Length: 100
Image 1 (cartoon, rainbow, N blue to C red):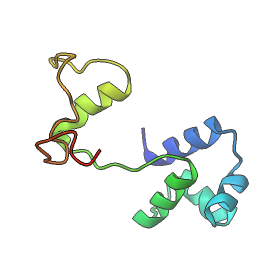
Image 2 (image 1 turned 90 degrees about the vertical axis):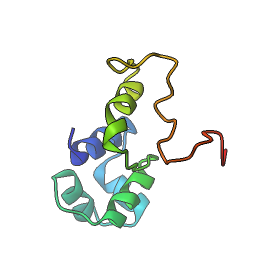
Image 3 (image 1 turned 90 degrees about the horizontal axis):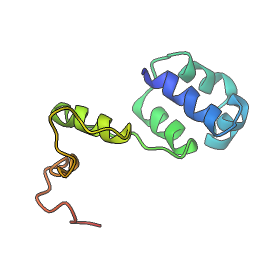
Image 4 (image 1 turned 30 degrees about the vertical axis):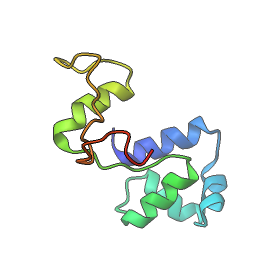
């Protein structure tokens, strides 16, 4: 799903209007509306919108994408045993508990 659709879906799930969310993140309604319409925002604008939606933007290595997506959808990835941690090594950190 495109990111602008995800922004709208999340905003609606939080029962916020575009105007309410825009005020929450320091944008005008028109600026935020452009995000939901599929504008070409800067990364810092997307991060600002994500913060207002109580979400985070995450870069996922392509080789981990299917496993992460399946985990988020509550399904095991095809060919991946349930006991395999798809987050292991995500950030090239040998110790998955490091920094927790």
